[in-house]
Length: 139
Image (cartoon, rainbow, N blue to C red; front, side, top):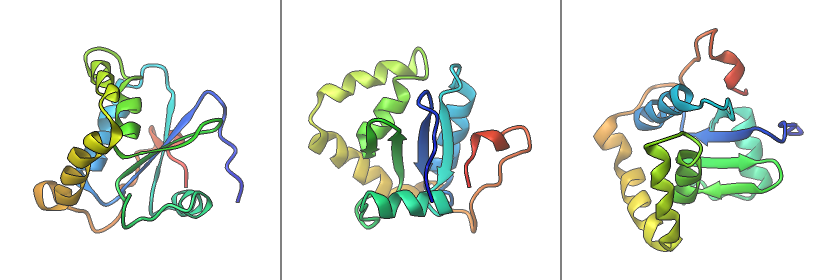
């Protein structure tokens, strides 16, 4: 499998069964005014391909990844904040937290990620996009 993503697009890989992740995807879609983001569940074929290609340990990173064709993968809080930086005011202001060292940001991120199923719940299967949104999702 080869990932041919246009250079102007970024791929967000998310936990397809996580309610918090799915709500975040819906928020990003609504605020992605530049139509920059595409999406794939970590559980999808593309998700599995990227996990394998980048040797990602899903025991340590299992909730959000940002893939950019020329830059590769961003993980955890860096991925979330880089995504936020493209969503317009006021959410883009959160990118100021990128000045905080990643090990500190990721401590907070990991705490939320570890508890996301308990706090927000979990689906039995990945979300199925509506026909209108299908073009934003990769298999």
